Image (cartoon, rainbow, N blue to C red):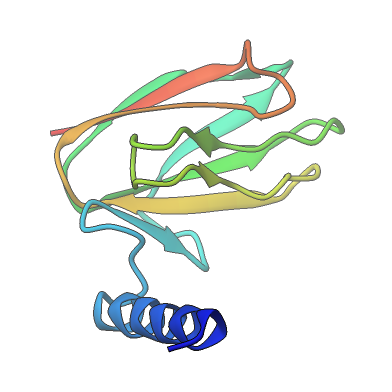
Amino acid sequence: MTFLTKTRTLLAAAAIALTAAGGALAAGFELLDEAPEDAVIVNIDKMKYETPEVTIKAGEAVTWINNEVMPHNVHFLAGVVTEDAVRGEMLKKGESWSARFNEPGTYDYHCTPHPFMRGKVVVE
């Protein structure tokens, strides 16, 4: 089996596993295309997450909304929500990013270009 064939096989297996998991990155974490109406909102303003720690129940979602001109994101380091790092897209003013947390735990995050901006999601 050539390297290219092995790579294609591994990528196909990963795609099948991701599809079977309903698009979830891991059992405890799922990126959402749209913000659920009942999501906990974390506003980003004045170079900080206005609610730096939120507590939710398993299965609930959090939506981050950037309210300032400077772009920000939400970045979970490797091992926090998945084996790999999860770096949310850079949000322009008025844009949002949402995730559902299905497993109890503490999920620490920060803003990639502004690492002093830190927050955490505590899931009960």
